[in-house]
Image (cartoon, rainbow, N blue to C red; front, top):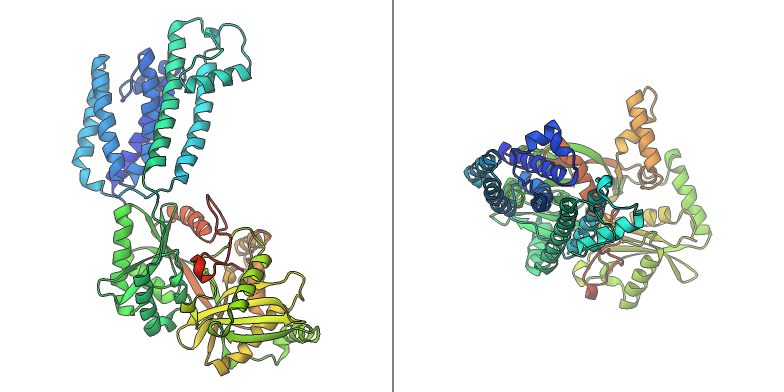
Length: 567
């Protein structure tokens, strides 16, 4: 997925011109440098009052640069306004060279108009607050520089607080306590601060008053169609049921035989798991997905897809794949507590049972309303973080009548609920772990007991496969501790173990490995290597490891309309 060179050229040109305009306005000796001489040919103005306008234009060009690189039509329209204004002002101030360059850039952008077709991103009003805080901080920093870079023009020796007061008052158009010997410098400082304050207020009001962002939501019709696809093709992917999270959007192939669930996070169109439905219709669904990404200039990405789906994605979308980790899958028929390899699990299960714990394995439909409320309240109380985590491998709700086939395993002691596992259907004969919570004061082996009891009860429920936790970078952890592992692999493993102090990387791998599972690799699919950091941050936001703005604080019951619960 290659981006046009026209977009890159426009974006970097906007960034360069913007930075030079800021330099001309802020630093008094900038114009005497060679770069300053070159900047005289670029859009911008040089008179005392006009330097303030040059500062504003520079900031706006820097802000627009990223949107131009993404091909945003609104950014193109903004430049179509800024460049003619710059050309007129350059002619007015007898700078024909700068005016001609502005007109040449204008003509080039008009010729490349078709490249700028991306629709604007829907933004929430939280962005207005972020804009106010960020631009406000920039205003104070630049304003302090504008006031202080001409010390010889300042009368007396005003302190830091006086200068800051002058900046804050100047942003509102009010003269401050700092006085200047040169009237030209005084005017430049005044109009520059006023321009900065005006820019911040205008952009903040624009973001605050525009329509609020439509939250990603699975409509009733889309959910019904997805459930139909899962009923026919759900056994192909253990993560398929998680597409029914109601904070996801969904795109269908033209035939309606395949679908992709996704959420847009920080400009990344993030799908998870395999496409749902008929494998023959996957390419058409992927084309719809990529077309939607291009329409908005979003970065397309997939996290947690299987090997077959990864091959289809890379072939159809011309993207690349990177192994992210492994999913632990247990074949019920092959599971046993016998043998030396299972000794540790067997001992933990026996010790926990002797401590007085018992388990119940039931379908969600068999729970009473009181039990559902009790489980939800306990799960919230046992959560280790303030924010509910999960996106790709979490359903985000509990006890919804539509999820009657989900499986719930609970542990009890003396009549008190002590732990819970929640599984979602994986086709008609499998289940996939969604939630694992326990009382922090309970026995350490309680989770092992819950999983063992679930596996032992599985045959009577018609279950043949159970998917447990996902182990990120499992292969690195396993190979890095083997004899003969190279220095790079060992260093990579050491880094993962260090990060395990904050993220459940090694602990999840060790826990899953106890049950002797089949390891199924999962992949991240991405367009370019340079996009990986951005995709990684977006994935962490989606999984709620990074929280911005509002957080999802509870595992929702049906009447509250879902969020999510993480283990």
